[in-house]
Length: 223
Image (cartoon, rainbow, N blue to C red; front, side, top):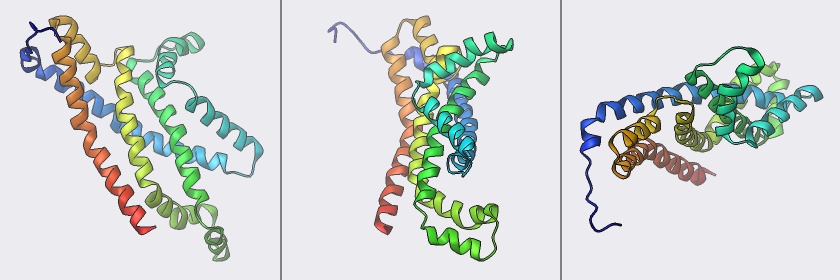
């Protein structure tokens, strides 16, 4: 580091409402995207586990496309390329949510699929023997166990999604990273401002990481 350099966080202190606004947008993106990706991922997992070859092919294709392309490309595609195909320009917020939800749901579907595959076959057969429909069996027997077993994995996916919200800044969604970059350009103090942004992300995400670690240890002890 330059010996003449001195830290100056005055730009951060003076403009904390701007960063708080970014935190609010980051939280909103996550609060919408995470439940939506879990719900969509559940239905995709049903498709990949179906008996119909067409449903399986569609589900697997969806998972492979969104797992094996960068989430940044997906966000940019929805914002810049989707309007060319449809003639409808998505707002930055909607484009960001499309990319984040579709990407995260592909991973969530694999978590669900792995969880359902871990349920002993006799439980499926026992539920059918009791006269349960597939929907009743899923709701009463399978899903509660899957959620308990996969909770640490879903917690980790939620953490990853929280970090991925920072990518929305590339299409001008005014979340935390966008506001940090804007302040850095305005005040020419990128080191202090981006350090503060990184610290805020840490404070937002670390509790979830700590919870995931605790859950993993608890479920490992029960195994």
